[in-house]
Amino acid sequence: MRIFLAEDEQDLNAIIVQKLTEDGYSVDHCFDGRTAIDILSCTEYDAVILDIMMPKADGFAVLSFIRQRNDDTPVLFLTAK
Image (spheres, rainbow, N blue to C red):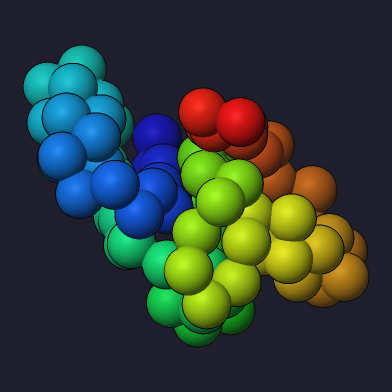
């Protein structure tokens, strides 16, 4: 299973990537919403994990981009909000 993670808190990002990788998932990740949109525009994933409050574009903007492409990939929001 291939998962994409967008989380701007670098320590949390690293912990999540490490745990998911240890559990056998293939994980790509980034630290801001604009990069997330760029990556998601050219790569398919089985699941996406998004922080809501990220620089350059928030998680809602990234989700909007995903859905405007008629992409029904499951998305999980991860937030301190």
